[in-house]
Length: 107
Image (cartoon, rainbow, N blue to C red; front, side, top):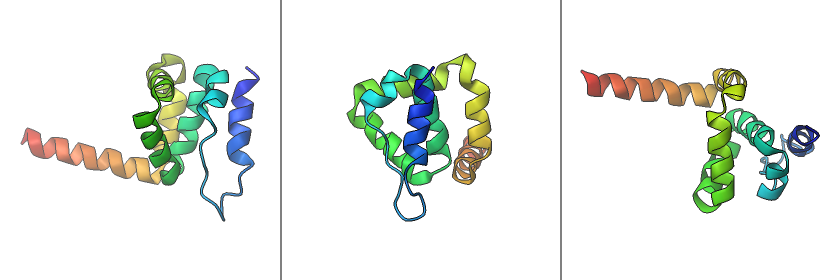
């Protein structure tokens, strides 16, 4: 339980306006278990460059990828992640685009 605060603090300690946020090392995130990965997703949903960093690391880092997928699938965190997505302009744009594309293929 101590962990979520350390991952979240890693994001908050960075000066956001001047430098893009960077992901903490996978080992630091993993120490916090699913909560650590949920904190990463919440931060990534609010920052497109961080979202891109998550996507890139998932391609190269198997442990990170598994942790992110577990966080996305854990029913205990569904509402938190949905809230983060709903509050993210770039995630909403992606959802709307996917919905539009799906409607075009269904037509």
